[in-house]
Length: 419
Image (cartoon, rainbow, N blue to C red; front, side, top):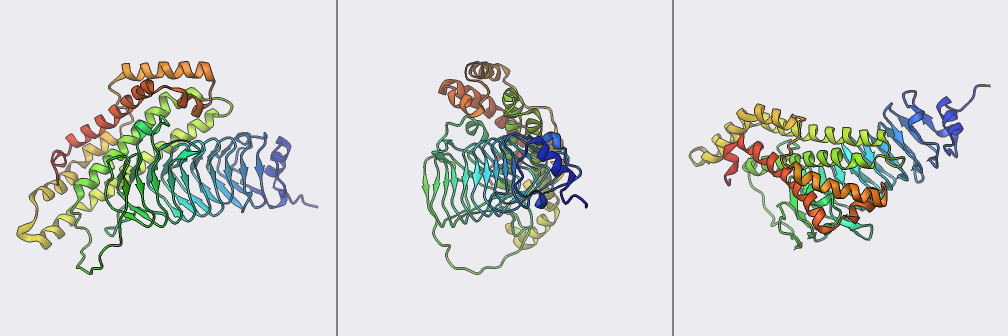
């Protein structure tokens, strides 16, 4: 009689993977079982694994609450994916997602970050400890803040990051916290109250609390503020798509977001690489860098798609405003359209913008001392760095952000002026 089990399932059982219902688990032929640990990994009923790049590390548990489909993901130690669909994403140590998750390309959950049930993510980066409630759509954003599982940034249930505009573009990434401060794991948490939303692109400072039920449409750059928005006044006014009256703010927000991702790339290159170990193996590190690279490519591509809309936007704006058209706004749109080729080349250039090696190296020296003293537990070592030394690291990364944005804006001179 034909064996009812997939041959790869049999191989995983032989490696020590716990599969309570082998007949219901499906392993695609492309999956390299050598990349799946046999140490404490559990695949519950209904699990399906696809993709030659899929990595599953020690102690990971898949499908406890509902079937799980994994395709090309990098799953770190003791990660729990309890139900849903996961593709081209990275999950670092002890991160987790509840049932009904829908997690797609460009997503990174760092240590102990996670979401409850029915959460959708795509091109989302969550720094350690960041926690999402239930029934959330949180694509195209980066969120940091918090110092531990008891002091973490949180998104309340039934929250949405609005990442698609009536002009049919997605140049809408929101930066909730930032990279230079967030990686140090010593910043105040951010709270986005439930039954609310954030209209991208937005920037939210550390310590911000946005009250439940609020829709935030503006940057909140002053830290430590409680923000509440009431119900908008009822209105019905003419609307014409494609006008882009705030193209300056949109482009500057996108450039700042991309610059933060480039700073994160340098952090992964110089810092994360030093933590490669049995609990952070080289394939997981490679997947982390590859996924971040795809996140940068996505943001540059979305900015390019916005640029393609400028000729029609200029014509529509002139037709609507006629003699009242803003010369500065028209100049910004033309400049963005005509200068984007140079800007695109700069943003896509893999060469790092890192002009302060002495500060970087001084910080890395302190980091190495922490590794030698405490071992390769990433969170513990970063938290052990004192404030003065972490400030050096923040200054190094902020320099990358500031330099990247400044060089980009030099290619768009009119964007340096208020719109």
